[in-house]
Length: 372
Picture 1 (cartoon, rainbow, N blue to C red):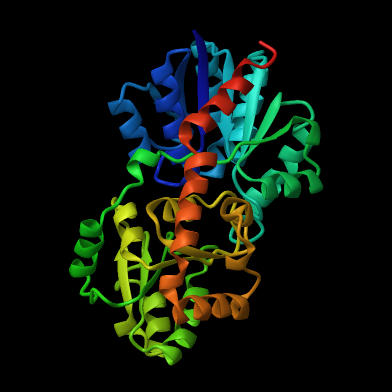
Picture 2 (spheres, rainbow, N blue to C red):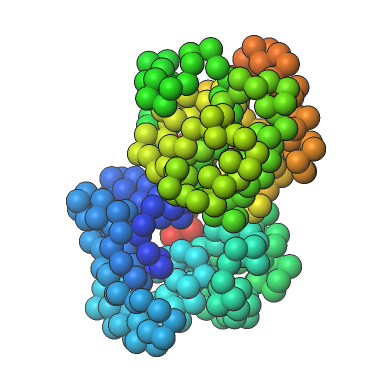
């Protein structure tokens, strides 16, 4: 049995962390590979969940850039002890530290992971600088580089990454968990005082400049001029009434009564089902998980043209380049929302066919075995 050791910066809830968890648990069930995980910082919710399901998780406790060197040596010693056949790293910090530590220990198979597209938007200077260093190291350290999105691959080749090592493996969805009923929809609506016949436009994502909630608020300001009964829903960490910045925008545009702020939830499929239209409004994305999740539960979707949204949705009519275009799309939908049932069915079938987790795991496992 081949041993795969994963290295990641941390294991709190996020797109890369959830994909790692799904990959590890699904692959471990098959029995061909044994997986262990190293978090450079803390255990986090995902780490605790992995441990509870029998996956060994090692925590190195890095707490700042000043402990990079110390963490590197701890990681190197741990890899020597674990003696994996493959080291798979997730995102720049882990690519850098994990790649160098694995190389030092003579590990032959090193797989880097790229999850982002444009780190100049919202990324720290350290992260931007680290990406440049990784571009140079990509020719000598990893054997393979896995990008979560086609757009990510193109961007990283342009900034100097080794194109010959690049693969694109999109995120996979656990389709049996992306299920929500009319009853689930009605419960969310009752909980947040949303009339049964109200049209709800919503989004999911932590409150962050890159997730671009201000754009969504500005779109809402224009749409309520057409239909003052519209309801807008924001789901995700810090999207709450305690967020002074967010509440300031809503107050300025007289939208407080039009918005429902749900904060972080563990019933995302139910929240998506409670929406009539899902809107992805991020400034930048890699592979936008939540767009696929909305498609899978049967919610009509529209998106800015970010990351692999166009590839995932595969319907240009619902992809917008700017605010005016997304307003036009939403106005068109709102004028005859019942006419889009076929689009909803097509979207769901695309996710079921192209992005089941089982198919994605096989693609990773093929890379594990390549050349071994």
